[in-house]
Image (tube, rainbow, N blue to C red; front, side, top):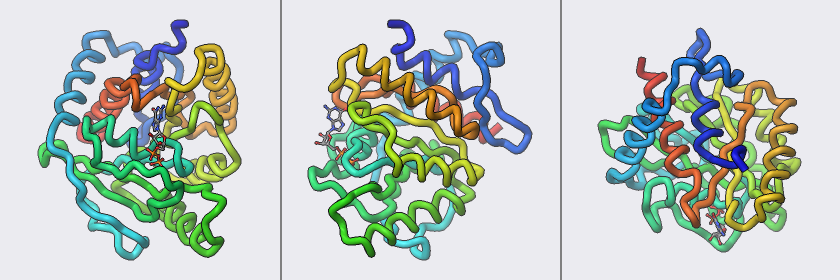
Amino acid sequence: MPGLVPGIHVLKTCKRHDVDGRDEPGHDGEWGGMTADNDAELIEAGRKLFAGDWRFAYAAPSIETLPPMGPLEIAFAGRSNVGKSSLINALTGRNALARTSHTPGRTQELIFFEGPPAGHLRLVDMPGYGYAQAPKSKVAAWTSLIHKFLLGRASLARVYVLIDSRHGLKEVDTDILKTLDKSAVSYQLVLTKTDQVKPAELAGCIETTRAALAKHPAAFPEVLVTSSRSGAGMPELRAAIMRLLGERRS
Ligand code: GDP
């Protein structure tokens, strides 16, 4: 099933750059300049950056307590329990950098991680959304924090919106996509826990998700296919981040 090779999804979708510095989705034919060699270089550069020393840097419970802007930031958003902490741990090769939790909704802060200083990059673990059992006032506060951060953070270079491949896109995800459409941030969907679904089911989920993305022209049209458990899609996700860093610095 060639469409399920994660590298193909990542490496074909992150190349064009429009005049205001924002990445833009496009067609495969427009990516002409990239070669397998470039891809291999990015994968190796990504491996090196994420093999470095990644540490917890800040926790911000409110928009007023955000750390000063500095390095470029890449945020990970998604419903509670989507596998966000696990993805950040898998990306950085750590078991416990981000807390993995069996209690949905426990993470209520924006958590910032920093890597080796030369990487000039922060990862941001956003509060999980869509946790039905939490008190309404708390949900409203987290939702407001998420939306304000997505709309108002100049150093935010990309948002990866995680979707559980067993469940697909839900209404709360669509709310986040609508906010991202209004922001200047490039974003892409990432299917998680793909080790848990059969290939045919996964193919269906990819198709449905892609079709839904047609209503969101600001999003990359392709989805990333990952599993933190098997490591699938991690080298490609790291490479996509390296490409973004390269584009932003050039
Ligand atoms: P978060 O609330 O979004 O941070 O989600 P967590 O990373 O804490 O993961 C929630 C649950 O899903 C935990 O029980 C994880 O072990 C499990 N999980 C996360 N990623 C994967 C994956 O790729 N495969 C499988 N099978 N389980 C996963």
